[in-house]
Length: 330
Image 1 (cartoon, helix red, strand yellow):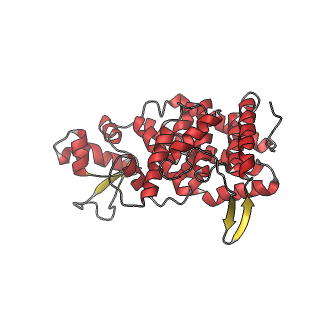
Image 2 (cartoon, rainbow, N blue to C red; image 1 turned 30 degrees about the vertical axis):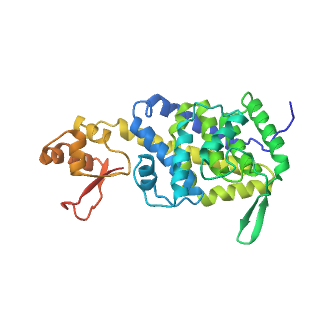
Image 3 (spheres, rainbow, N blue to C red; image 1 turned 90 degrees about the vertical axis):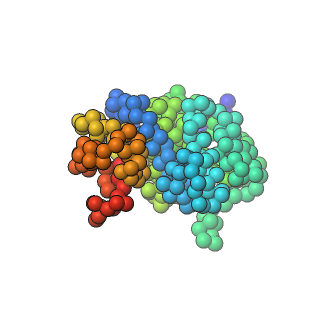
């Protein structure tokens, strides 16, 4: 057994955030938010996939990512469409592979980069640097050192689950993985997938928390945290960034859960059950999905109450009576 240990220091701020996250995770689990609502699980997983690939400059919108996953035709670069398909397949496999296994990591990289990277599933064999314009701001370890670095990292990871909180060691792993940069492509996507897998090993609710979506929202801060950790020679800035974004994700998930649990009529609940978040639906599509025939009934018992509660919004709010009107679940 090696004595390798990534440099980081657990401070009071980290412990405070970890305690808050643990408490909120327990609240989410107690509400059975995801176990009873498969559409919510799916929606959040799609948001995770979109967030993670978007960080790597994939130009597909959230709606386009959703369409790709639904098997619909999407106009866009072939490689970006394939990246989405690969990422969704990889996230769907969380829980079926061992996040403490280096061999499983290689297999999952093969899935994450299938058909887009010639060396899928294999460590890089060339030097790698990160550039800002024409200036190289970071040089990754040389390829000859990668096998030992990754072996040491996974041995440390396996040992750490006995003594370090998963919220901490998963964040350390995320940073160290990015630092080593073991593959020729897909390192960011794999680092984020693997942290989610590690957290899901601790609590399955993390399978369906779209942390990647919030990393994308704060993408510049994400890269700044990585750069700050490079400069500091430890992962402390990055750990704090990740804990903060997990906390934010849970705040929004709890708000979402409370809205889902709020009292509403059986009609409104049926409406929400057939609507995915962020997707536009025409009245005709909703009628068909609900098995209704009367537009008057749909408007009176379903649409108007849901609009009044703020659970759905009009796609064309300035023309409420438009024949092209659509409805979107918030």
